[in-house]
Image (cartoon, rainbow, N blue to C red):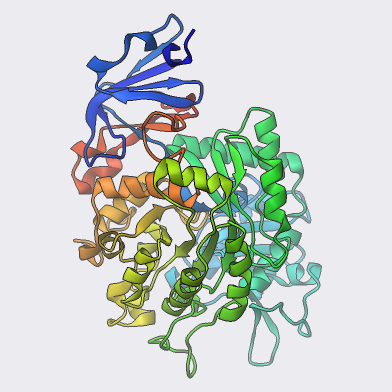
Length: 559
């Protein structure tokens, strides 16, 4: 039989099909054969040969059929770990409450094992203030405790943990990190940036491979439940061998036919670039690939470690401008050969000076085309692109520069409302208008790619879309009218940033991001159709079904 006349395995129909190419959905059908879309169009024009005796018909009524959500930036290992029974995830009301919330974890974990959590944010506590090891020591004098901050840049350790890790008052932190000390020079238990990152592999080493595989399975299912069909798993570390991009765990699930998300891996960019080559050689299937590199240029604004041009408004010392993790010339020395070899680079840059210097580097060193990317460029009218991650605070002229250079802006909408009043406190009113400028970026012609930075914020894309469209917090729905409301974007633009935009960030625009023939059949069904809802009601929509490569990975069961 002519391959063009092979019946479809699955035909989905609805009064609302959003392909991503148009601003509004239309009534129609989507036909799938194997793992690809083979036809999209009005239901009345569906070719007769697509109906076969084994074709599954799925009529979704008035629900929205759209491309699957693809998270452009998350940390799979930590997301899976903190949602598993191996750890806990919470912010706490204050330091004492955070310590108290360790009790359930301590009860279920073996005696003497690490107590690991993530999520505390000292600036959200009442009273606010950086914690110390003293409160943990009082509750757990003989058990190591490691509490990772909500922004994933700071560790809060007790004395037992410091001793197990071999850290004392004479210890020196690695480059790019620090140990907080009191007025007498003693360790407080707070470990920051690269120093915190360097300790995490030793802390999680006690978890078995089977425990971690169970966590990965569960997190993949959690993604599917929220309409996630693909993710970019980006390095969390800036140091050799510490990126937590665990291809071995993904590969094990893939081999067992249990991998239910499409994964694009971005390991740490080092002088030795052999790991990416090895990952590319080892993982060439449709579900698991290595697509480029990741590096860090600065920290976070709330801790004054984001690199900004002018001092923080609430400066803690003279010329308090944060700092780069590595000098700009050292970052350029890493990027230049990778780009020349055709490897896209993603750089964490939050402060306006980090962003400015990053654009400079990417302008001078665009990604060279390879055989694969030349094919992608021909198919999609695109090219391999570098990406900047987070981009919270711009120098005004850099918005146009970023767009002109074709750099992808990988942003996380829910970061906007993580720290109410924080931008005003740290940066002052003159710089606030250039915080997370989604509307301005799109108007300049930039590509937005949405994600969550999970576990920093939850994986749910509906809440992220709500925040991008309303500029309001997904939980509190504050502030009324939205924060910097002129930077709101439309629902179609937000969905596009979570699908077509993320496909570009993943370097897979030729095969993901739209509902059209030739693309992978990564599809989500939402009900009610969000295009029929007001912006304030967008969170009412729920995932009804998630398909990855044409296979149903999740279906909502009616209560």
